[in-house]
Structures are given as C-alpha cells and as structure tokens.
Length: 78
Image (cartoon, rainbow, N blue to C red; front, side, top):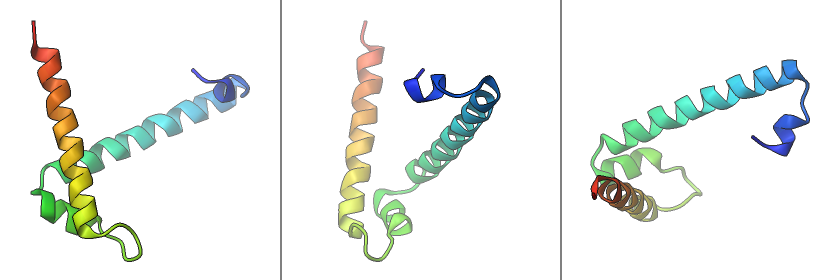
C-alpha cells in the first residue's frame, strides 16, 4: 500500500482503509454525475467563483472524456 498506511496501527489501518474506500465512492459518484451531463452544463455546475472559468472547466471535462475514450478503445483492441 503506502509507507504512511503501513506506519499505522492495525486499528488505524482499518479506519484509514474505510475512509479511502468511502472517498473513492464519493469521487466515483461525482464523476458519474458529471459525465451524465452535457459538457457545458457540467462545467456550469462545477464552477466556483474565484476558481477556473466555466470554459476552463469545460476543457478539463472534454480532456477527461477523451482520455477515458482512448483508454476504453485501447482495452478493446485485440
């Protein structure tokens, strides 16, 4: 796993693992929600004043979707 996790007591490792799994679940749900929307709608929902612009967020989303498509295509090749 990691040196940090390995430095924890067995009881702390259980908590750490549970927290990591729960965080991964939240991120997966958020990404699924984002990817279910058109790019600009997802970017508008993700926008936070003071952060990246809606256009910058839309470009990040497009990039993530292109990367996901490329990875899926690479896995489906014989």
